[in-house]
Amino acid sequence: MYAIAVNGSPRKGGNTEILLQQALAPLADNGWETELVQVGGTPIRGCCACYKCKELKNNRCVIGNDGFNEVYAKLLKADAMILGSPTYFAAVSADLKALLERAGMVAIANGNAFSGKIGAAVVAVRKGGATHVFDSINHMYQMSRMIVPGSTYWNMGLGKAQGEVNEDEEGLNNMLHLGKVINWLGRSIKNSDLDYPLG
Ligand SMILES: Cc1cc2nc3c(=O)[nH]c(=O)nc-3n(C[C@H](O)[C@H](O)[C@H](O)COP(=O)(O)O)c2cc1C
Image: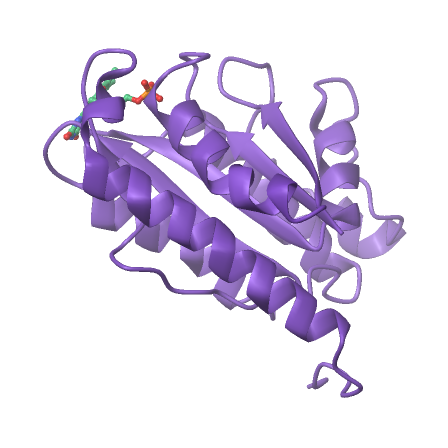
């Protein structure tokens, strides 16, 4: 089974990345292939509303020169995706928003390609606005026929300076629990003989 975590912070190795690695750890321990992909700070831009993906239906975006399609191919392959963002002015980072727009649109255009996948949102925050970020990421999952697991709190970790989130024990424990729940859910889905409902 394959889980991808996407870092939507332009600050590589920062708090979002630490939280994502923490959520991936129980998955790797349980035999999942795991990968962390950096989207923050890359040229990936937002949807240009050309709707070509709805016409071409080739599981690609026509903006083909910014690395989006490579990330999208990994999302398509994933049993579970964990999208992470820092809180910027109480909102999702512009870099992760760009991925959400295009991945969400291309997947819907291609027969709801994310249908039945597990999706989790992870947020780094200094003080306020994290639930809005959390909600924004979940909005894409929940209209893409995905399955969103819960944890012990909304998946956020507190910290400002790079690495400060390591002092938020509750946040780190939440991420570990989230990873364990994704493992449990992913295996339960794999072992189920029921098909994910269409419609
Ligand atoms: C442009 C910008 C806007 C921010 N806005 C907020 C905010 O609205 N609320 C907050 O609590 N922290 C805010 N912060 C702080 C970051 O969310 C916090 O430092 C976070 O841990 C950064 O994660 P990172 O290390 O993965 O980049 C902001 C930081 C930046 C650079």
